[in-house]
Length: 439
Ligand code: LLP
Image (cartoon, rainbow, N blue to C red):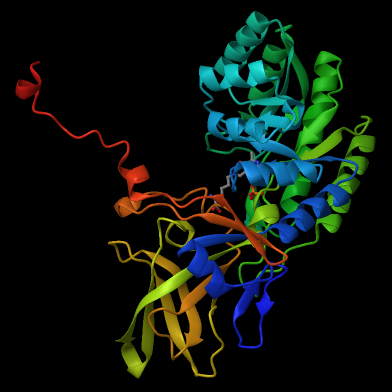
């Protein structure tokens, strides 16, 4: 986070508070949110996309406090379940500033969205169009919708693939004509108002080329829709996916540069197709919350393991792991880690930060160099854990989920408390032998 630095003892300080004080007050592991950093990033996106709408993708991480902060900076929110919708509403986000996503929203979720009056529902299947139309009709409202289309672009980090066909669960295929069938299905239902098309091409992307191909294809479809149905849809959403720096090897682009490039493409492609340029929206999640949080762990054991060639690797075990950050195990994600409670002049040793779970794939940081004098009780900080860590946390091995502590200007506030063992065991109802229960 932006306010992270070191004090005179070499200790990590974030939001004006030392890592040791945070660990003492809130325990470890703990997620720490730098709220100044979050505000600055949210404002930065709002400013860069001033002529567009920015929906914060709540799946990256959502709690009431974050939803409030995000909305205060002028961002809208993208939710993809009834749970995320409930948080956004509880935070007081204006329903008009909420979009609901999902390839299999339940009837209850659709009904909750229609009842709340969410601004956009992004429809993903023909059966959902029918369900939503009926719910809106019954509620006596006209629900605004976007159609999720599959543009045949898949992007990750520095690479993207553009194909005609994409074999995946989301959206209506553009190349097969399914997208046009969906348009006609929505237009047939007076209780639905078609606002535009939505596309999402991937995540942790550094190169705008994939977005450019997507924009080109979506605008092509807008032109086809105009020719076939005689209407010009006013909006396109190009989804999320803007990458962040997890390590020094990552070089993300500035939001202003991305915005300029996208608006340029939309401008030129629209005028080529003789369309009036649609209003753009985007849905960054990771880029807004990711760098604003870090995780503090306590070291429990340091085990030197001899590798081939006389090399030694230190296995540094911390008090969390794949239950609070599954990304390393799941995606081979890379993170930056540092000693947090003190400075050290010891030589750096090849190290691997591992968790406390009962499997060897439970790795937080696969390869790193940490001071050779780490001892139990030292604190480690892992950077950029704001996105898809707490939100994907689990109770694996019956481990309670860590808290989220918001820090700024020397003050700390718990915004998500640590789960207790009672929380974890609360759903476990025990077992009574059916015979003795009398049934
Ligand atoms: N919009 C839609 C429709 C999405 O599906 C997603 C992410 C986003 C926006 C936000 O993408 P972002 O800007 O955060 O990259 N669990 C994975 C990431 C899954 C992303 C799913 N969809 C991870 O930890 O990397």
